[in-house]
Image (cartoon, rainbow, N blue to C red; front, top):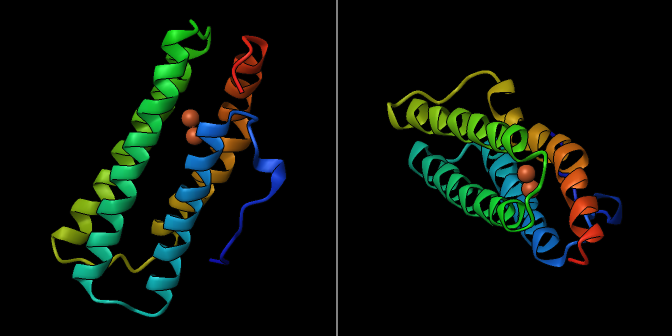
Length: 135
Ligand SMILES: [Fe+2]
Ligand SMILES: [Fe+2]
């Protein structure tokens, strides 16, 4: 999985969210390069847990904005967050139970979702927040 870097086109034009997305991309990149250099199971577990924790914190930040400004797409966006976290937590359990996932696709979720989610749902949220004068 190639390492990808932050680009201005990923911006949702809300500073707090953009900064968190940058951090998220950094964590995902760490995870990918660590998988490539075949780190130990414990280290992999640690990195995954760190990613899940930060993702969970980031999702709460977005949800806080959605509630505060009565975002009409809240239910749908919230569901996507919940499903993603569940998937990531399952991955942590798989690794904790001693299995190093063999299929590279097991990890793809962490980069695919990040970009797809930012480009789709988060951009919509950003536009909505901008219309409420939140930047
Ligand atoms: Fe989101
Ligand atoms: Fe996000």
